[in-house]
Length: 626
Image (cartoon, rainbow, N blue to C red):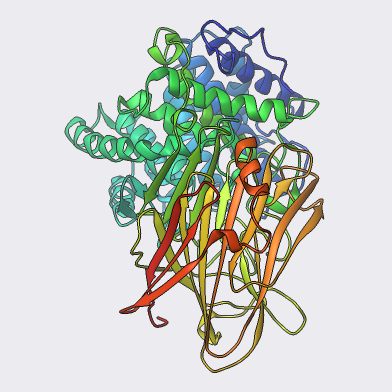
C-alpha cells in the first residue's frame, strides 16, 4: 500500500485526498518500478506471467505505460521533476529506439502489441515535448521516428486500436517529417461506425460496451484534437466540438458507475486497469464538458484511488499486479502481461489540470449516487443502472453488452451475467451468480452468449433474449432453447422475469443465482422466489472471486415442462440495515410479494409488491426467436 501524506479533511472531507496525494501516488509508483528496469531502462520487467505477446513485448509495455504516468506528473507540474523521472525514461527511450542497441525494442511490424505501446510513448513525448523530445539529438529523434514508422501497414484488430495509429501518425506529423495521413483519416472515420448514441461507442463491431468507451474511444480522439490543433486547426476544432458533445453526454451517466466506496462497476474486460476507469471524468474537466461540479469529480476520482490503495492493489512493494486488489489470475486476459495494469496511469490524467484548477481547489462534495436513489436507463449500451444512497451501491442490469464473439471460447463472466455491481464481482467458475441456466444431464449450467434486445413495456425495465448453449464450441443457432429475461429496478429491488421456451415439449431443471456477496462484509445478497421456483439455497464459494476469498451466492431452482414456462425472482444486494429488516419480515416462499402475471396481445407483465410496500412491474413483448 502506498504510504500517503496526512489526510486533508478541510479540503477533502470525504476522501482526504488532494492533488499532493495524487502527486505522491504517482511518484511512489514510478519509484517502485525502477528496480525492475533493464540496465539501459528500455524495458521494465515486472514479476508475473507473460502475455501472449511474450516477455520482450511485456517489458516494453512496462516502459510505455509507466512513461505516461511520468509524463502526466511532470507536465502537470510545468516541467518540475524533483525525482528525475524524465531523465530515467529518456535513457530508456534512446536505448529502445536505437536499432543497434542491445535493448532495442521489438519492431512494430513484427510485434503488433508494440503499436499499443507506441501510442503511449507518443502521448508522453507530446506532453513533455519541451523537456524531453526537443532535447534529444537529431540522431536520437531519427531513431524514435524510425521505430514509430514501423507501424505503417500493420494489420490490427478492428476496434480501439485504430486510434493508436492515429496518435502515432499525428506525433510524427508534429515533427515535420513525412507521415501517413490516411491512417489518421481512416481511424477517425472508423470510430464513427461504432458510435451508437447517448455518448456511447462500441469497441468495434457488435455489442462491446465496457470501460473502453471511456478510457479509449473518448480519451484518444479528444487528446488527438489537442495534438492536431496546430497542424489542422479547422479540422481539430470541428472534431473537438463533436467529441466534446459526445463526451459530455457520456458523462451525464458515467458518474453513476462508481459506488460510494470508490469502486467502479465490475463489468467488462481489462478490469485490472482499476482506477484508470476515472480517466473520462478527468477528461471532462480537461475538455470543459464535465457533468459534475469540480469537487464531485475529485471526490469520485480520489475515491477510486483510495479504494484500490486501501484494498491492497499496490502490494507490499507498491507494484500493481494482475487482479482487482491483489493478484487474481482468472480475470487476466490472454493479452495481459505483468505491466498491463499500468493503464491505471490514465487515471492520473487529472494532473494535467494545474494546481489552481477548480478540480483541485474546490471542496469535495458528495457524488450523485450518495445524494439520492436513482434508476437510469442507458438504451445505447443496454444497461439499467440503479443506485441507492443509503449504502452507495450501484447495480447494473446487462441487456446489451455481450462482447460476442469473444477472444476465447467459454463463459465470460465480464459480459455474460445478468447483473453487476460496485460492491460485488462475479464468480470465476461455471456460471451461477446473476445467471439463469438450464442444467444438462450432467448438471452443467448453460451459458449466455449473444444478447438479443427486446422491447420493454414498463418504466425502468430492460429486456433481452438469449439461446442457452453448453460447452466451449456450442453455437446458439444449434440450441433448441430461448430464454427471454426482463429486469425492472427501483431502489434496492431488482425484479427478474424469465420466459423459458423450447422448440418441442420437454422437461428441464432450471437454476438462477443472485449476486455474489463477500462473506466478511456488511453487504447482503438475497434472491426471493416470485414464481416458477420451488427450491432455494446458498452456495458458499472460496478462491473464485477477485474481491474476497470467501463469498456466498443465493440460488433458486425450478422445473420447465412443455414448451414454455415463466420464472421470476426478486434479487437484492444491499448494505442498508433498513432494507435487511424489511427482507427478514418477508415470507421465505415469496408469497408476501403477491405476484400477478398478465399476458395480453403478446405482452407479458409481471408485478409484485416489493418489501417496501410499493408495486414493481416488468413488462415486455414476447417475440419469436431471431
